[in-house]
Structures are given as C-alpha cells and as structure tokens.
Length: 462
Image (cartoon, rainbow, N blue to C red; front, side, top):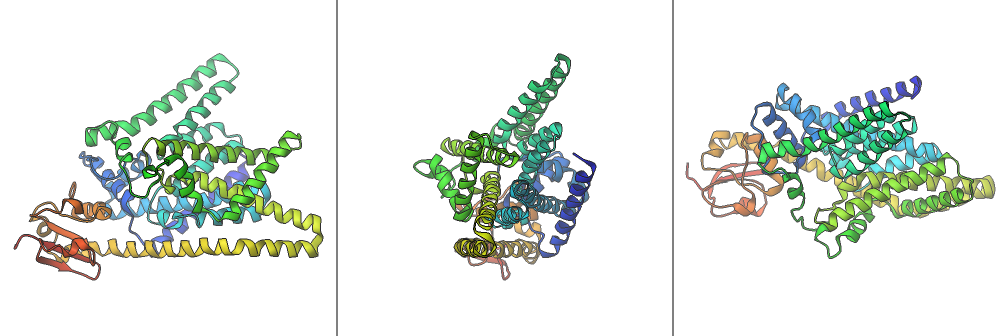
C-alpha cells in the first residue's frame, strides 16, 4: 500500500473517530447485545465471568470492553460506542471505495447510501451493535488484498471471525492460499504455522470463555439455535426464507442493476474483454453469494438467519448495484448524447426515486425508534433511584423485566441475572416499561416508583 494511500486511510480513520465521539452528544445508550458485552467485560476484569444468560458470546467486542472496564462503567460504555460507531462510518467509507474502484464516485455514493439505509443499519450501529465494525473489517480485508497487503488481509479476516464464526471458512481458505503461494519449503512451513496458530486462537476465543462463564463449551451455538419468532429459522423452508427475508434490505432497482452488471462482467470475461473492474465485480458478487448461502444453510440447520447477520452480503450487493446504476448512466450519456442522455438519466432516476424514498423513510422511522429506546434506557437509573436504590429493588428477590430489557436492568442493578416476564412469579419486584402488560400485573401491587418511562412495583409490602 503506497504511503500516500495509507495516509489517506489514516485521515479517514481519524475522521470516523472524531464523528463517533461527537455522536455521543446525541445518545449514549447501547442496545441488548452490546450491554451484555459491557457486563462481561466488567466481569472478566473482576474474575467473575457469567455468560449463562443473554446473547451469544462474541470475542472481539470483549477485547475492547474488558480492558476499558478498568476505566469505570461510564468510560467503558462510551469507548465501546465510539468504536462501534467509528466502525460503522469506516464501513461506509470502504463501501464507497470499493464501488469507486468499479465505476467511480457516483457508484461510491450510491453504494454508501444504500448500506446506510439498509434495514436497521443506522439504528443498530448507533446503538452499539457490531455489524458496522464487522463490515469495516471485512471490506478492509478486501481493500487490503487489492493493495497487495496479504498478511493484513488475513489478519482482518481473522478479526472478522471473532464476530461471525461462519467467516472462519474464508479465514481457512485465505490462509491455505497464503501457504500455497509461498514458493519455498521453509517459508511455507512458517506460514502454515502462523495460519494454524491463528485458527487455534480463534477457536479458543469462542469456546474457552463460554466454558468458564457458563460451563457449556458450545453455549454460543446452542444460544443461537434458540427459536426466534419471525426469523427465517422458523419458516417452513429456512434456506429460502433467508433470501426472501433479506429482499427488503435494499431498493429493488439496486438488485436489478447489480444483476445486469454481473451478467455484463461474465460476458466480458467469456469474450476476454474483461478489465479489472469486471473481475472485481465478479469477486464481490461471489463473496456475497457465498456468504448468503452459508448463512442460509445455517438457518436451515436451526440458526436464526436474521437480516442483521447479512450485513456483509447486503453491503456487497449495494456496491455492485451502485456500480450497475452508474454504468447505465454512463452508457446512456455515451450512446444517446448529452441531450437525450440527460433525459434517459432523469427518467431512470424517476423510476428509482420511489424505492429510494421508501428506504430513506424506513431508515428515518428506525432511527426515531432507536432514539426512543435510548431515552428509555437513559431514564432507568433515575427510576431505580426513585424506588429507593439498588438495595430496595433487590429486597424482594430477583427482579423481573421484559426479555428485551434484561441486560439493561442487570447492568444498572449490578446483578448477575434477572427473571424474564414469563417467569413473573411472586415474590419479586417488577422493573418494566410504563404501559406494558407486565407493569400492570396485579400480583405486584406495591408501587416503588413510577416515572414517565418506567414502573417499579413489588409483591412485598416493604
């Protein structure tokens, strides 16, 4: 990678970090999974890891939340949110870069906006989920390979497997390719040793902490196999449902333009007229397809197959689709001339506009929903304080809350676990969203606190 290119990426990274820090002014509350990572990081520092409940274990976030736990809960949370949001912004920059490699800046802008407006991306990454960081690492690996940085590529792929275990397939494949391209025996043995060691470390990072924290070596897998209502895994044919469920992630014109672009690249390759853009487009399409098929097969085996696990293929599809739209615009201009070319581009834009508008409106609604969740969790410590504090809430036994709020209540109360709503048995204290059925359970008549967003009631008189 040339020095100038490396310097530019360093500036992009600094810019992403600065914007991520500024974003803390607009919200500092993580969602379910990141809250669990914060809890586990804190527990690791204190030698008390407990992972029996909550989401599946995920090694890479813990590499950040464990050491930052030494700085205190507030700093730990803010640092993770900055990392997650900076990763999401870097993913947009790398999406732009890869599409730019295909068809220039217009394709880059379309692809980046498509990823930003894909289902849930903006809200999930703002709330601290790891999908944006995952895409940044995965697309960074592609960019590094294109720049000839093989070991950087391998390192980034290994990092990606610490968030999505199915990507281990790509790590193994790339690692074996690294071994194969080494020309002599001694360096080949060293390369094989490094690749093997990386594989052992990845497996250990997924399994050993779960064995320590839950007593179940494969709890992450068993947790991911739990049925989730509405997920592809619960459909009659989960493999197909993974694709149909993800279809709404991007506007349909992007799929159509991307398909046309890939077919054109195949034709160019077969006629031996392919340039670097055509080969790159086929490679990106192949990676997207392989990842989709892999996750669909996992859904068929019982894993959820939810759309947030598909962020990498969705981003790659947006890149190819954005390149297709840009190429169509170039062809219209070249073949019809400036006057009629502009007319054709405007007509094409008018066809795309309703689909793009729907995506923007959906993203706006998702962001507003995320802001409401942020305000909800920000108000929880005050509700606990009004109820008399931690000791008062815990006086009647293990607290009870809605399943989605379990991690927030666990962290704010500083306990190992709380009971979900389906285990709302007396005695106990309910910590529930105001207006939820759980907050109105008559078996818990003693009001401890009522705030605009939370209700804390107990079955105990004192």
